[in-house]
Image 1 (spheres, rainbow, N blue to C red):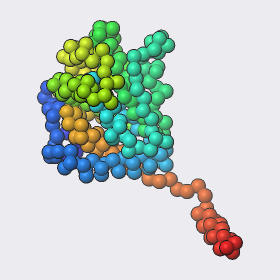
Image 2 (image 1 turned 60 degrees about the horizontal axis):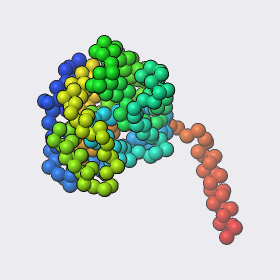
Image 3 (image 1 turned 180 degrees about the vertical axis):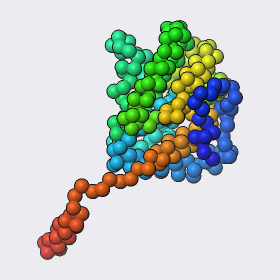
Image 4 (image 1 turned 30 degrees about the vertical axis):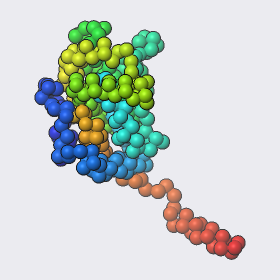
Length: 281
């Protein structure tokens, strides 16, 4: 099953999140039955990243957005741990600092875009400035609409520098969010994740849904598509995201670069060194 076709927000089409079942889990019934397929794609991610890093012709930008407890951290932990950290980075975009607020909203984002050969993962992103700011009425409709244009232009610039962009909205139900809040209360290892805003932001659920629907509809393009990933089942979320990223990277047609040294000469030196080692013993 090609999750890219199934979950993409088609450019020019209006997204309606209520039409997408956040509890969807494909042809697998349990984590156990999906484990082998998930491991296959995790291995593929590692292989594709090795090619990406060696070839250094492309960068990969992965954007993760979700409502609170949607699974952004979990996706980083369980999917993108497959990447070698020497060629990958994760940037979390929190509330802007005074310095960041003194610049345009994209100023703090661009330095974290991936160089060629690199994977950059945004845990929250430049989209916060058309989501949180809208819901909390810090900007008006004219401003967030203009920012959609700025975002599309920004992502086009990245594409022109050979950066592929994959954007994921991790879609959970309101009931699942409450269940995950309960887990944070009951598990001492998760208590640290609890914040005062969990429940105050939850009261704005419908406003956030409307903001996400507008933003994703306006900014899903062929070169920087949005995918809405059913995420009530964490294992299915991980499977779908890993497949989409791995298959997209494979389509880049990457290959290992040719060696920059004379292999015949290096082999001669190697064999000479082996002979010297034998004589020494």
